Length: 258
Image (cartoon, rainbow, N blue to C red; front, side):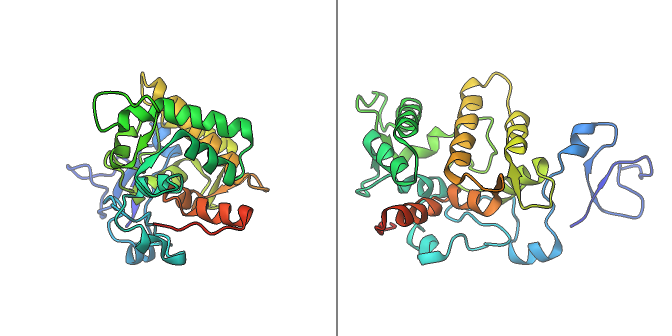
């Protein structure tokens, strides 16, 4: 697939002469030039068809079209949406309910200190417990329910999760394409900050705060020595598989993935 910038050499339908390219930028509108969407190469399209279609249970990219296959992760979690997979690490007894203590324990296992683990527990459960509740009555214990976890999706994010908790490869790649330089297969802290600002929706303080918290936690969790947050690591955070790997390395204990 090819893309181009709009120019005046177009036919009556606005199509560049002699081509059928998709116009993705307009020279007079700088933001469209600066933030270029992901355009898959012919080779990438062979590996991943229709990246704009949401995948229910696979965090799929051109380099990993079948999601995370290590330890049969994708197969083991095939009955869960990608958003549910992201949360499943914190569901220690696999009953579909995450207690605040589970979240604290999970953050400690992946390397967060006591303060940040308590802060994460507070932010996550105060904001996301009620939206995931199975009834109109708030849960006095601030638990999260994985059956309704899709209702916790907020605005001003990357758009990688859709409103049903599926994974959209195009949106995932767009974030790195728009805000990265296209050369290092990842993002620096500054580029992430530019991305957070670029994705902000109007009048959405919950979404703004959620995006800042999530990317801050991601950076702290990965803490890259060269300052570059790798795309593949972020993909594995989306499906939760990296949580298990890091926890097992830190604790020496293997968690059942299901």
